[in-house]
View (cartoon, rainbow, N blue to C red):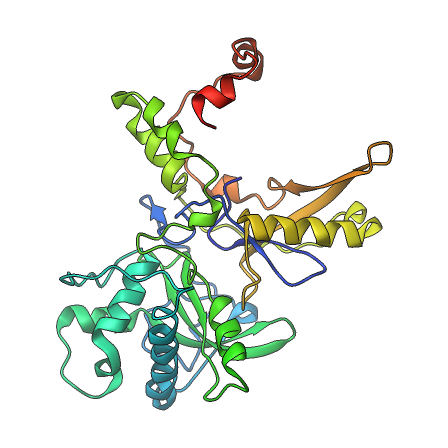
Length: 331
């Protein structure tokens, strides 16, 4: 299942974000769009940002400029800590080509590490470094009933949140608490190329079966299907279907299994812009239970450009199936 960059599952347990191994949640590819007309004035305490004007009811509380340096230092310490641990996937190394308008979350983190404390130290910045700093928003967002400080980075067109990183506290009660805080950060489990590897559910043998003309499909199976947005989806957050709560213990257990297998990523530190409702199916005869993902109700697909592909119907595809064919193909 392909999800919106900030689409997640709304569950009774901690928030979990679905992933199919796609980098679309981190490297948004947006087509030409026209920004929506302003509906109100920009928040008064704008920090280092050229943010699009937003509705007053949705305007986040932005921190003062004087605190940016200390917040940046705390986040840098966590970035350095996490990418030096066995759990952290290293950010690509080598010569840094600065990309101030990149739409890659991994490149943003790499540039944060490369610039380091210089970003807010008063040193002279290059035009590219200054443009990059203008995209950083140190923002107070409400999540799970309380406000916390986050670093929010939007895509270059200003429509989608590319990164939402919670600023860590100055001190942790234990090394375990420090590790748990970092492990819940958005994209911290991605590879250096922006791939959520646990979400990829194809074997390597499958890729040998693709023809040269099928390279786009081969790349999509390996890296996830990129989503091309033409507009910003409306915020969507609704409760799960009643069937989910009728079997709450089974539903939570199924979510935990999915997270352990890598189908889901989370829990996270923030509430995504769009959420996916879930229901459930239970067969008493076989005592089998499954969560059902209702990915259409969020209407995210309506904000995406139609995929340039021709789809086969299920009936002719099934007519070609033979016993053992999946083993031959390596799926």
